[in-house]
Length: 231
Length: 67
Image (tube, rainbow over all chains, first blue to last red; front, top):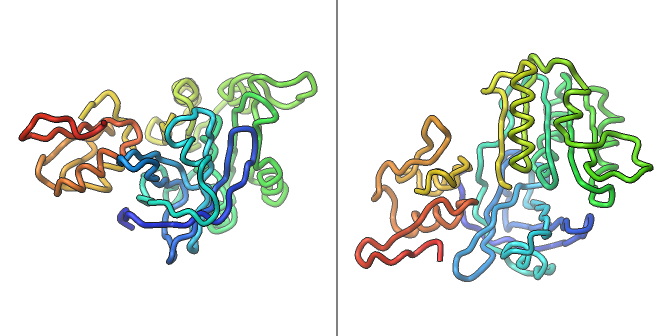
């Protein structure tokens, strides 16, 4: 679908964790898009826009956007000021960071809100496409209190034996028993080779550079490493 | 185009396809300065996540975007 400028209404706004807000928007009609795409919101009258990945699965009139307001820039201030019933100008859908028709074994690596485009992608693979090959999601965050959607991904892990989910904290408490450090360190611990895998990376520049180098050294072809650099 | 800033998000290509095209390095190039109407070119610039597109009024030299 070519991008269009449309007006949507805010129907719900929820604080998921410290700086992360999930905002639900409803369009007048069905809003077709592909899992992994993003939209551009007009956040100021002078035409300033901010891009946010769509956090919900395709289908219907509703989309969810997960916004980290930590940076406190124009987009953060706009999102914090929104309330149910407000109208927003949405340009989209945009972006080519989407699933191929027949992916290989899929590795998703995210830091921070880079997990957002992976949520609809993983739901699509597991629930719509009944994908049976391995899917692994590694999510790097700083603190445990920053986490969200944990129960949802844990349930997917329980319901789908081919899906594996790991959280990697760079600043864990003493009680944290799972992975710690950088996501890149954990990738190496998980597997000696990623030969035959396809990787999707979304997050900070350092992670993207480190993980690209690591995966290239562990057998992933450069053309099978897909990158979204919004950070 | 500020090539160093381009991350290949391709919003410009989606909004103004007759003006912008991604090259082999996944960076946007201008293929035809007059490929789209001014409003589409301005929206392409405004929707760029990294502000990699500057819009200049050719008649006055004034920078229209980013402000």
